[in-house]
Amino acid sequence: MSEQRADVPLDHDYDGIQEYDNRLPNWWLFTLYGSIVFSVGYWLFYETFAVGRNQTQAWEREEELAAQAQIEREMGKEVTEESLLLMTKVPAQLEAGAKIFQQKCVQCHGPLGAGEIGPNLTDGYWLHGPAPLQIYNTVMNGVLDKGMQAWKDQLGPVRVRQVVAHVLTISGKEVKGKAPQGRPTAEWEKERAAATPPAAPTDASAPPKTPNGK
Image 1 (cartoon, helix red, strand yellow):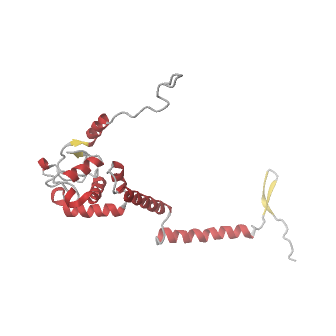
Image 2: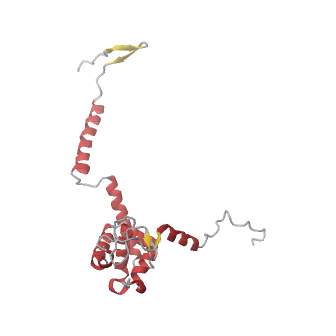
Image 3: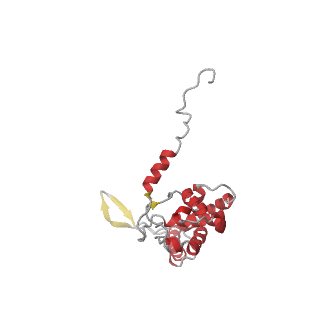
C-alpha cells in the first residue's frame, strides 16, 4: 500500500487559521481538464469553423421552420397582416420576393426601392398606406390613376405575398432617392388607430349581473 501523504500546512496564518497544501483529487482535476478541452473543441466547432449551429443560430433556424410551416398552412386562407409579417422571417420567401422585385418592380421603383417613376419605398412616406395589408392590396389591385398596375393576374396571390414581404423588409431603410411622396407613416398609423373599433370589454370591466342573470 502506498504511504498516505501527511498534511503539510502552508506558511501563512490568518487569525490562527492555517491552510493545508493538499493535492487536489483526481476526479476534480479530470473535470477541470476535460472542461478545458471541451471548451476549445466547442469554440472551434461552432465559432471558428462554423461546422455546426450555435444556440442562437439553432433558435433562429427553429423560428424559420416554424414560420415556414405556418405560412404553408395559411397559403389557402385569407391573407392577414400576421401572415404577411410571418413571411419576412423566412429567408426563402424573402429571396423569392427580392427576385420578383428585380424582375417586375425596378422599372418604377429602382433596384433598391428608392424610386424612379414610382415612389421611394424605403422612406417614411406612403401614398396608399404602410400597413402590410395596404401594401398587399396596392400590389394586387393596383392604382390605375397613379400608374400602378394590378399584379394579381401576372403574379398570383403567393408571389404577391412574397414581393410584399420584400417591400416590408426594405421599408424604413431610408435609401437616398426620389423625394418623399404621400403622407408620413405616423399619420397613416394614427388614422388606422382612429378607425379601429374599440376592443370588447373584458369580464372584469363588464357590468355586474343581476340576481336573475340579466
